[in-house]
Amino acid sequence: MSAFLHARREALHILVAWGICMVWTIGYCALFAYESGEVSLLWGMPRWVVFGIVVPWIIATLYSLWFALFYMKEDPS
Picture 1: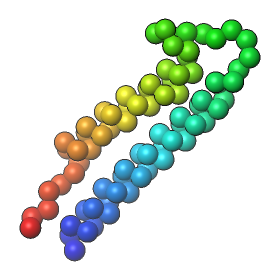
Picture 2 (picture 1 turned 180 degrees about the vertical axis):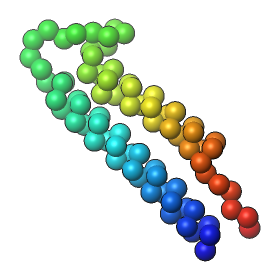
Picture 3 (picture 1 turned 60 degrees about the vertical axis):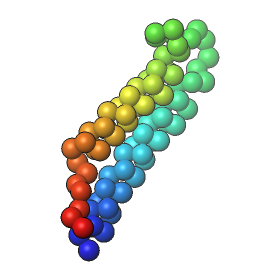
């Protein structure tokens, strides 16, 4: 039963992290991608791409590394 509880807790963490990233990406891109006027660039990409897509990917990758290396527990068989 302990393995089930660990797996459920870990799945909840992943679903919450995925949901936060999804809401941020869709929300930020929807608000800033369709602005009329001049497109401001950051690192050679539109600013909304950097903050709406690239930054969440970097944060999600760092979270995944932390999660896999430090948070997940191996259950004794």
